Amino acid sequence: MPDDYERLRRWRLALGKAADEGLGGLSGRDDRAMDGALAALYDSDSESSASDSKRKAGGLGSSAPRVSRWLGDIRTYFPNSVVQVMQKDAIERLNLTQLLLEPELLEAVEPDVHLVGTLLSLNRVMPETTKATARMVVEKVVRDIERRIASKTTAAVTGVINRATRTSRPKLRDVDWDRTIRKNLGHYLPEHKTVVPERLVGYGRRAQAVHRDVVLAIDQSGSMASSVVYASVFGAVLASMRSLKTSLVVFDTAVVDLTDKLEDPVDVLFGTQLGGGTDINRAIAYSQSLITRPTESLFVLISDLYEGGVREQMLRRIGSMKESGVQVVVLLALSDDGAPSFDHDNASALAALGIPAFACTPDQFPELLAVALDKGDLIRWANSNQR
Picture 1 (cartoon, one colour):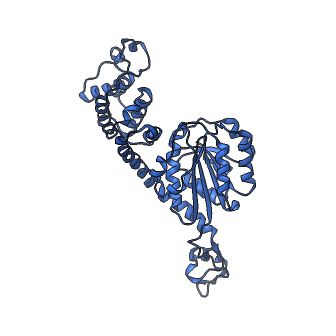
Picture 2 (cartoon, rainbow, N blue to C red; picture 1 turned 180 degrees about the horizontal axis):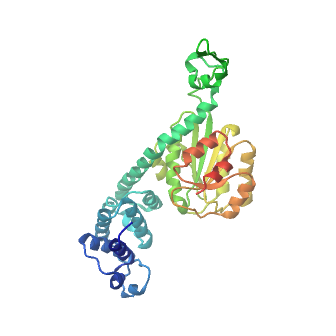
Picture 3 (cartoon, one colour; picture 1 turned 90 degrees about the horizontal axis):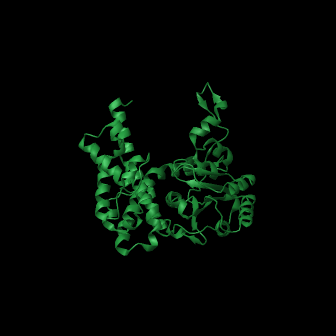
């Protein structure tokens, strides 16, 4: 627990200069530098801020050199997690999006998922001089996410596929001896100190076969930016697995198939156009055309369900998909951003069809995939993993 001095210091940094009279000033050089960085973002230039209980935006102006120095300061005095929050606040509160089109400034920014979302939303207006730097920023975040989720996702999916291909008549080289022994413990012969297996358990020689089809449909409206980033990386990881046939489409009022770009999730992300309206019905209709083996297919719709198309058709299509044998999952968000905003009426309508609609963190998604590909109880899983 912090002592009284440390507690007062933290309150003073949080409340700003207006709290000097009650809490005392800041004495250390680093503390004054931290206070200056906070004031530039959260304090108002006017004296009226002293009577306000909340810090107000307005201190960085629109100068790229000044913003660049500020970015350097916050990286010096604050931990990385705080830096990312302050950057996000600066972009939103001070309207710094245009400054992100300058390569020199981008090089000073701490890359994170929210910054990637902002850059992707600027993709269409980004000058050529900035695109190379922006791609480097996006690639750094993508590779970090890949390192975090790839092995866990591959292990979860491989486990499901291995169970699906298990056979009771394996060749000797394919015998799963551990499971075989456990299955036959009742046939242990004490006099010979051995187990005589009546039933062998092993894996089929189908490693190169495609066992499941996965279709990811991603809503690219502006509010779904973090989900688009994570879903694109997951799509690329799944596409690298030969046992799966993975398709990825993004949509707003139009549908774009980015399956041919799945070799590199950075290419997928630069193929998106964040913002605009939403036609979920059209996206589901296109996704249906990709499904040729309903009972061996998983459809994952990632959307906040704010439908700009024909709602009744949307519900009818997705219900029909489920009735045909497709395992259907609707994710209201695939991110770490906390509770999402979503259309509660559409989520309730999907629940009535037996289709779960819930938010999921990137860390939970591999486990969700395993349950879905194994045709498990998704509603039960969702209820036990709600945030």
